[in-house]
Length: 152
Image (cartoon, rainbow, N blue to C red; front, side, top):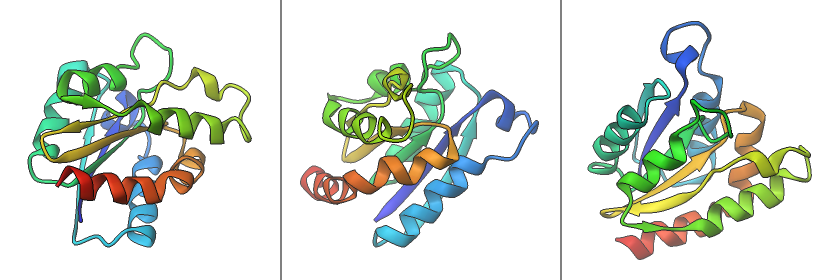
């Protein structure tokens, strides 16, 4: 499986701090999926830049996992960019991740992560908190693999 990791963060893209969530996504992917290649991108919270990066990664990857930009703040635009790009939305992924996250964080309902299909690529939004990566991906990992196979 070819996997794209897209971190959406104004501060990380400006070099203000290190992108820890993108590294956590890569760690999870390499531990849990049969990965042949990982591509990484880092962009600021700009809807068109996020959409452009999703298209670029989606054109060459089977799965794109985003991290960041899923909250309710004005600059959080990852779900909107995802819906701009995807032909079909898969809301069950976001629902399952929020349900699991509620076990750890009472404000998990504020997260707006979603998923969709762009061409033959599955796109899944994850929160930007590094601790949330394993919490969110663990309960959906079998569904991710099944979805990637179905889309192909």
